[in-house]
Image (cartoon, rainbow, N blue to C red; front, top):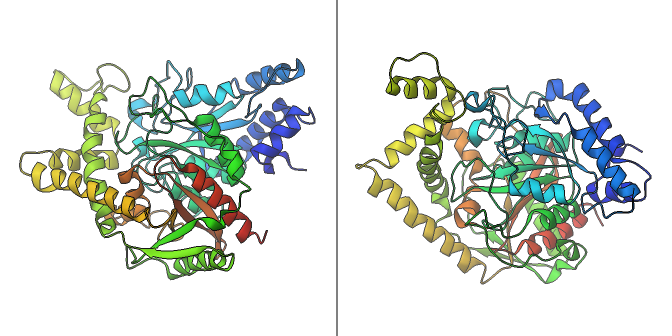
Length: 477
């Protein structure tokens, strides 16, 4: 038995029965990282205290104490989520030597349930990108084909789970940065409702869009992680005080009574026809299982990418203003006056994609462009939200492809606009603040395909139930 192929729910049972130890699993993972990650490059740093923390967990179990839902399970963390005493670099020169003085709330939650923080994963700098090519530490590679990208910006987390270099990994999702890499790497990637999971300790990209999510090997593990990370947090004013159900109770329920919605038109003309066919085949299997499938209009969805890019750039302009070399992070030594210090620090400390977003954000918020672009984008965002509200009066969940294409080769998306279009199926979900998951839907030319399930606000239970049902259908169970 290869321990590293086990899921969270399988491994925790073995740990609790003392058939395997947390130390054994953690040491084996670190060995695998040392051997495999030199070419994959999914990690930026490994926790030097991971084995020591695993030993403490084993001692706790030996004493008969409750080890928690994640009893000794090693979890990786995207490097824009703060872990006390560990680097939090955001894959940027600006924070290359920054060590967080506190834990993000989500880190406190997984630790309370017995998780071991294994290390910090690679990402696009400050979460700007769809390929994990924009990292000061170098690109992460796709475990299915090392010449292709793992997606982004949480590509390191997705690749680590896919390559069995951790059992689960935390990521962040502003416009698809959990779901798109999950599709590219053949794993489950869930983005909860905005406000369901605390964002305290997440380095902000776009505050009205960002949400911490996670990657797992299967849907049951996703339900376990939802149980652990969900809940209101007084440190985050955007988190919502709504009861958190036990999501594992929705796994084995018959989801046939749920009505499925599919958009009545394609959001983009150049979607890979093979992906479209594969998703259609999956939906046909659900019809055969007795489910009702209905086409639904989402009339403003086609404007989602334009709206998303305007808003994310405007909000990131504000969030990135703090990185100026004054309080923390990188500071250029090449200056003689204050303005020169600001300019040279940001010029040398930030990468090209980050600078592009800053300039676009400054343009959108300028006097000439605020009303015709930024204000109009805010209004269209409201219309997109209303479209989903109306759609969910007719159906329980909406299913779409996760991506328009298979994992692409490095350097293939040299034009920024082409890269931005990678999130065309996912960005509207963030604009509306909805929960969504990407689950594996088979392979094309030995490369994974993802299927996206979207639900109304705070109805992650529907997502878990439907994803579990589809998982069984696609496996023939």
